[in-house]
Amino acid sequence: MLLLHIGRGKAGSSTIQNTIDLNHEALLAQGIAVPSRASEHRGHAVDVSFGMQQAEGHEDALPGLRALLDDAANRHVFVSSEYLFTATRPEIDRLRQAIGPHDVRIVAYLRAYPDWLRSLYAQGIKRGRRASDFDAFFETAAKRAPSRAPLSRWAEAFGWERLRVRHLAGLDGGGLVADLESVLGCPLAAGPDQNASPHWIETEFLRAVHGHAASTGDTAPPRAALAAVLTVLREAIDLHAPDDAMYLTLSQHRALEDAYLADAAWLAQRTDAPLPPPLPDRTRERPFLPELAATPQDVRETIARRLRRSLRLKEQPEVRALVLATIAEHWPQARDVGDDAAALPS
Image (cartoon, rainbow, N blue to C red; front, side):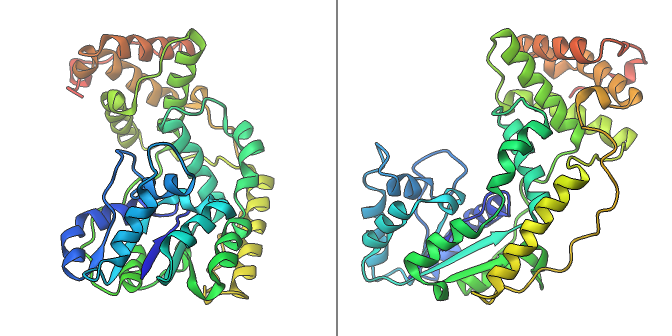
């Protein structure tokens, strides 16, 4: 049987994929095969989704999947890729044809849409894909929140009885890993949760860095090159403990909340997915649009001082120049003050 985790993205996919990696040998010993990665991308079986798209270089992905299914040593084959969530109907039909007579069970996890959209915004910035502020992002991204169309395509191809949808807010008894255990039918060793949402100051600092690079025609540094910067940001946030910010306005939050609850009620009529608990009541308007200029003065001075003195950052002169130029542009009043104890080897 093919066990297919289709996402959605920003709803526990990285945790699932890292748990599968951690338990790969134990799963294989129990007759559960997992396609190997043909790519360094975090999508666990990204080449399967590319094979469904008939992408060049992935022509062997679907025949390879069929070979695993045909192997009598494999009781199940497990595939996880958040890219499958938005697969088109022709792509899903190619998968259905490729697996032939083998049965399939499909699992998808949803997250409350207000939280999901904020996480999606932060993810795009972390990967250097986005430099617009949240309100501009909301205008184009909010329409992607409803899940009816993507889930309907899978259900129409394979049947609602083969589709298992769970809401992260409604998982009991161990959460996501325990629910995955029930899908696979075996115990799993749990690793750490992945991709926790960053503090708004971390998100907005990275957005400013990528935006400054774009405005000057420079190439934004990859996330790995910003490790020293991220360490300093986290230390400063932990030191001063500024409140996290609301990204959504009251009307934005309510629109996404309404869409989420409507989809949950719609799914409850078609699957055994329990309705999530009521979302926290949102009655307060967003105090400010999160952007770097809104960082409290004490936090910005600590960040600026430690970044100027970071020994690790001095070993990356191009990245350091970009970061200091970003500080000068957005925090022109951030002073280089403080004792030498601030010069952490970050």
